[in-house]
Amino acid sequence: MIPDNQPTRNDDASWVAGHSAGHPGDAPSALGPRPSSLLLDYVLRLADNALVLAQRLGEWVGKGPVLEEDIASTNVGLDLLGQARLWLAYAGEIGGRCEDELAYFRDSADFRNLLLVEQPNGNYADTIARQYLFDQWHVLLLAELATSHDARIAAIAAKALTEVRYHVERSSGWLIRLGDGTALSRARMQAAIDALWMYTGEMFSIDATERVLIDGGIAADSEALHAPWIGALQSVFADATLTVPADPWMQGGRGRGGKQGVHTEHLSRLLAEMQVLPRTYPEARW
Amino acid sequence: MTKPMRHPSATQVAHSPGPTADRTAAIWRALGEVVDPEIPVVSVVELGIVRDIACRDGEWVVTVTPTYSGCPATRVIETDVRAAVAKVTDAPLRIVTVLTPPWSSDWIAPEARRKLAAYGIAPPRHGAASASLPIGFQRTDIRCPNCGSVRSEELARFGSTACKAQYRCRDCLEPFDYFKPH
Image (cartoon, rainbow over all chains, first blue to last red; front, side):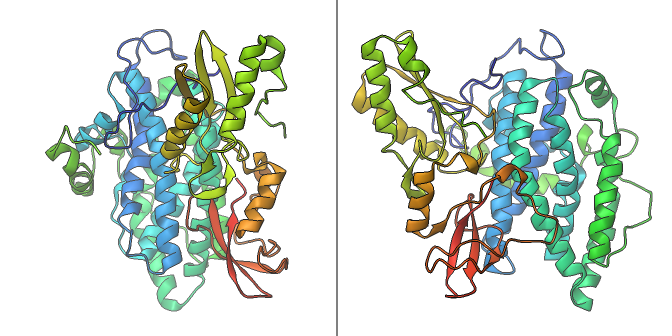
């Protein structure tokens, strides 16, 4: 059985270069034959992380600090956008809405991404810090999801993993270069890490949705990702002469964070720009 | 690594009546002429994008896989595949995209690797799946497609398209594209 053996787009030239038709109603899943709002919620978390970070990285187009980095950050964004489409297509099939609808016609409270990825680009140290903290987690998460009992999740994760391995090589390289660089670059790199640190806790917290899916062998055990994540971080930070922050207070605690749709104000502004065209001209076609 | 591509000499021929087998071979040949729009010297068959061609209940099914999830060429390739198949048969065509197993640059055919180098793109190193280097390390032995030197250095991890990185030759000093091992 090839789980993803179905078209991922049709010939319709719509906003994201074609969308997959939603299949309302029953979607086969490892949870059982009925449509699962838990599964939909979880797939949207995966989709929205990739989509929102892709949009952030796209903001660097034409403004990168050097040409090579302009190209690199937008290429990473492009990979993430591709991954977002794969996740959104799956979410669309579970929930009966098409990929474009999910991307362009949900408001911030319906987005399920981590608070970390919606944080503004800031200076380049801020962008690199956000990217490395996310990439190092993303690579561990996808490696786990590649063995998910949900065959579609496993297939998308295995595909994305090949790309994300490359992302973490780049972002860790820059973290080291800027951290172990000049006094100014080091200070900015450390300040960026310190400022974003409170958004990292959410990556390792488990809420009721995840608990059920972890027990079902579908979702990755977020808590178990923390030890390898912090281990990798300590090694990279040592090379970068940076300090791993000690502050234990984290945003998004008690089940009220990005994964539950409680966002920072930055997401609304990001969505306003990302969604304005299809919302203004909903029937427009390329 | 086993190539997931099936060629007309394999299963299709064995299980199909003559005309279908001939048609299948003709479609493989036609798709062998469809080039990647971003690397116009190698075909989508040589790149390993086309996985399978089969006839099911009067409908042709071409199975493809994306190189990179976000590759903007995917849609153009689909259009070109349709046009190429239409020259061989009037029967309906369905293009199916599969993700498993994920595409690897190891699937690029040997002949295509030579074409890439001749075009100025250093072909990817083999063993892509295990190609990940320790953090902070980079290859300095990618062969320069201009002068053939194996003394090179990475300029940037990403290049003009999703599948390329930028390198520079340390002998002739020319920059060149390197097809990322993936």
